[in-house]
Image 1 (cartoon, helix red, strand yellow):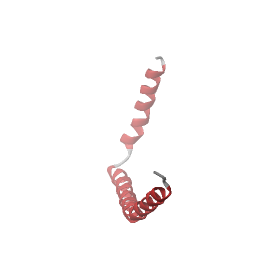
Image 2: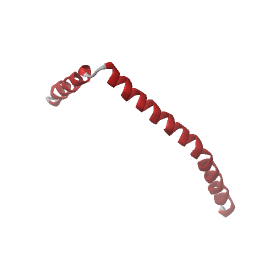
Image 3: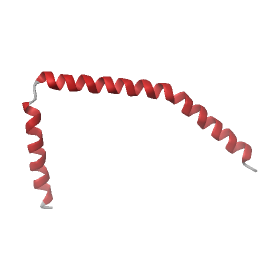
Image 4: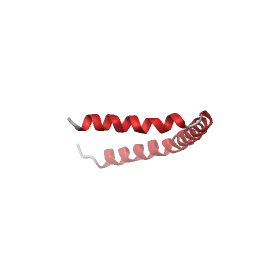
Length: 68
């Protein structure tokens, strides 16, 4: 249990530098994050049909090889 106060103090210390950053820096980091997120969503949207098709093919193969 003695670790809890140390972790809490470490978190408080880590939050201080974030307060010193300017709004412009925060907005720049946020914009970059949102661009990366949008790119990841587009990639996932492009890749998803292939995954679904591969899953269907694997399932069909499993069903063909399954013996009742």
